[in-house]
Length: 541
Image 1 (tube, helix red, strand yellow):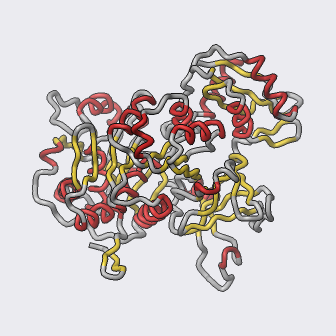
Image 2: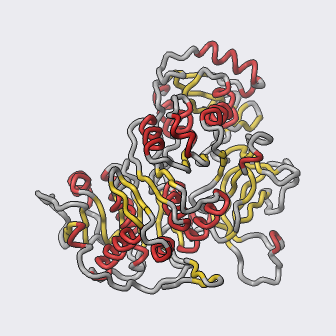
């Protein structure tokens, strides 16, 4: 055990202790629901110990990587907490990834054990030939007809792997790595963000504190568990003694059905899902239980936020901003939403957010600058990529944020690449990604600002804006959008007429291409702007 003691109650400092400590306090409390199955904290903790024991008995060294290629299910959660309990590192792989992408991740970080299902193994096995570090594959059920595997790789069923008595894992401390989360690879090879126990535990405690999570909560895990905000549903719930409901949904309506049936009190999602949910009728039961809804992964359109608040007026909206490299950075308290609906709020507890100029000095009020995050949530960098790590993780300039020049060791901070401004009261406003900013007619235009206006016209269901090269203007703004009903039957002339009324001339899209929704997502559930832009250029050349 590595518990810290606060008063008379121990406090967890390692990721798996979030679950173990709650199991000791409230063993019979419901912890995890998947379909018709619900495990209490004692049963879930015992399952985690069993999986960890299998890793230890297999002789895995400290910090060995355990890949998890599964949809949301009980085994996914058990393996995610069992690997840290053994002193290993879990590597969640988005279930939407294709075999070659799974194999790339396994090769890149040297996965030793792969946890998957028989069906997924049949698909991914041919791509594993070059995964030389792989020694064991654990499947959720026995495999009737094992596929050809690389020489020396042993195949185990879940039941056999977890059958023997639990065994104590390697000793670790909170600065040790615990997870590698791979970001979307739409602009190149995916990057593995390395997180420590401290990162994940501090993040869970911080988020749970401002969301007010408690034992009576039921949180819906609708986002991928390979996404930091998705995994946060587990860590914040287990820290608080709440219950998590796992959901693999096909249609947005499925989300509403489960929210009603399971009496969900907390929902965290990304704007594309909220846009779809806002266009549906909500069962009355949801409004009787939903305590809050939280947004992450991009700015929520005002019309979408308004529609959600009309459907569940008693639920408190939390607008959040974060990045995988630092988990979560800011949130806007619900009481500020009416006054500043476009704000991403202020720093979450136990984090500090700076707005810096290119020379490293702090920006003044309302002056655009780069968002820089410092504190316990700053991750350990990108796995095996010193170059990209140096671009994003930099020493904090001396004399900033109370850093005295006499301190000899530098403090590393995350330079987000996002342009923001801070008003006189300290509230932050997102302007745009530096690498997504559209440069047209001498102006810098945020694509999200254009999208906000498009949604406000109420003529589009989903949309994305991006810049395309132009001989005289530098770039012009191109839009791809679906109609409100999700079809490609979009009145582009009327939409552009509305834009001309609402936007200065340099921000009016040069073209709107209708497309049937939903628009393609990246593995984290966000509309894939880069993919759509690349495809558009390819069609036009």
